[in-house]
Length: 177
Image (cartoon, rainbow, N blue to C red; front, side, top):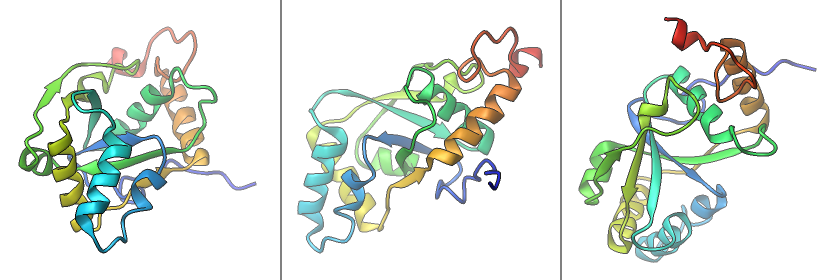
């Protein structure tokens, strides 16, 4: 059995300094990525990814692999099973701004190192459609952190004593710094 290493941002298709939005399913995005009618595709994707108008959605700012690993630990802290596929799309701050989406920094999650990288956004139907249209026109696709990669990331985080990944962790390495 080969050992899986933790993935790099490049391997996951994440542009450093961007935001990621966790998706329920990769197909909610990618099923429409090749449609010729971008307006219709954007409408379908917006409905699947952002659902109801006025809801609050979570975004995470990611600049480094270590930040992504902490985010994975936070996203899976209450999940069962923890080692699962995590599907997401990355979005730049300029793309959010162009769609009229404002960010509200609301610390969240069990990983102390990354909780300040969590943002709440309220997305209207119009801003969701605009954002999805822009991303689809750039041929942006949804990516997946595969189950084996998630498992490696969680082990890495447990080795650090991350409170999001390790049960009964006394002291996370970020607290010892």
